[in-house]
Amino acid sequence: AQSVTQLGSHVSVSEGALVLLRCNYSSSVPPYLFWYVQYPNQGLQLLLKYTSAATLVKGINGFEAEFKKSETSFHLTKPSAHMSDAAEYFCAVSEKGRRALTFGSGTRLQVQP
Amino acid sequence: EAGVTQFPSHSVIEKGQTVTLRCDPISGHDNLYWYRRVMGKEIKFLLHFVKESKQDESGMPNNRFLAERTGGTYSTLKVQPAELEDSGVYFCASSQLAGVGETQYFGPGTRLLVL
Image (cartoon, rainbow over all chains, first blue to last red):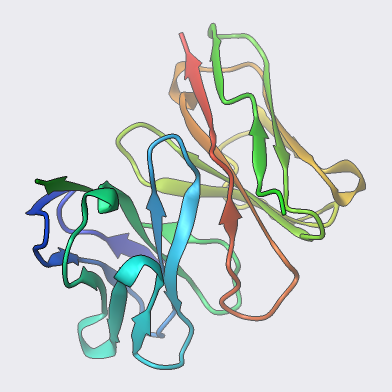
């Protein structure tokens, strides 16, 4: 069965600093990969997704992620953090042929002024 | 266009009681999913409807959980009788019947607390 590991349940950065949220998946076959964000009292919102096209995926709000097959990773980055980026971020995968998403445990991002 | 809506937003019940959660997907979305996040754990898949048919029930924890989607529109998830370990946030998501790597649109969730 697929599994997703997000290193660091809490990450704190200063405003303007680089944001790096880590995600590793377990699969011998590259799955479809997603990053979702959840702001307080809201549902999960898709940030970006990888579906076998370009390995560097650009998403909304200045986020991007790079699919690295050799490292089975799909880390999320943003060059400069804003206060509004404070939220919980979830990495998810879906195996080809299956629609259900398998989620990581989430990383809560805190942005310090 | 309205997003996925869920009702109620919060529910507090006692062990042994019954609770019914409702999800209204985005209009025209044939796929409807239920997920659950138990406190401190990851979000886990429960089941998937295509229109009114259950496509994948592999994540349903036990027979105390019953999901329906009559008419292929809104869905309900009933927990009967509720146990303490059922506490958590229940998310609903929907998507169009599209190709691979479809985007699932999530609702805000229902926070269930079983005392």
